[in-house]
Image 1: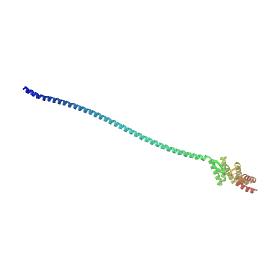
Image 2 (image 1 turned 135 degrees about the vertical axis):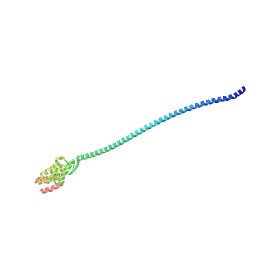
Image 3 (image 1 turned 90 degrees about the vertical axis):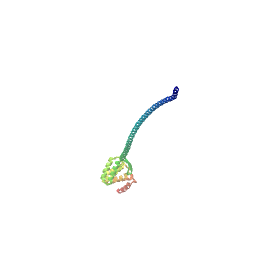
Image 4 (image 1 turned 45 degrees about the horizontal axis):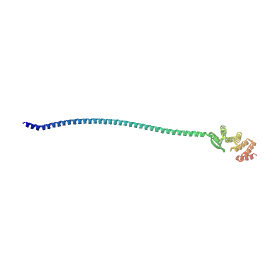
Length: 264
């Protein structure tokens, strides 16, 4: 019986041992699964942390990017506004420059016109060279105008008025280059109105003051005529002889010879 029990124990011992080993292995397996679960949970937590951290970083980066983009848009908008303001200022300055250029051109034109007007006025006031009865001299514009006006009156045959305007001319321009010619035409106007005494005085003044004048021979011939009209034949003959001696080649000298022959 003991042997039987021993045999049963002997047979049961390996089984028990196997059971114990199996239970130990099962326990070990249970322990390994728990560690794995904890490791998995820990890994998951780390992943969640990393994910949350990554999400936060992405969110922060997105926020920074959004802020940078907004700042960039504001900067671009400000720059665009500045460019628009600069363009407006440039256009304004260009307009001002163009206006200044127009004003300058207008001022220059007015100055040129004013200068031309002033030059024309000065030219009208400045003496100019004239040539009358073979003589050249400088005369003021008013002087030339008044002489020509007086001569025009004489040529119209208004001898009385001619006397007045030539006398006025000689009084206003006593040193004029027109003086010898004015004396001749004054004497001629007086002769035409039979004012022989005044006429001969002016003819004589012409010869005495300007003996080399182109009208001097004619003045002596006209003087002789005045003396003849006044019945001063002796004085007339003397004047004609003076004319022939002083201006022998003149036309007046030829006429004087004929008259002198008739006076004899």
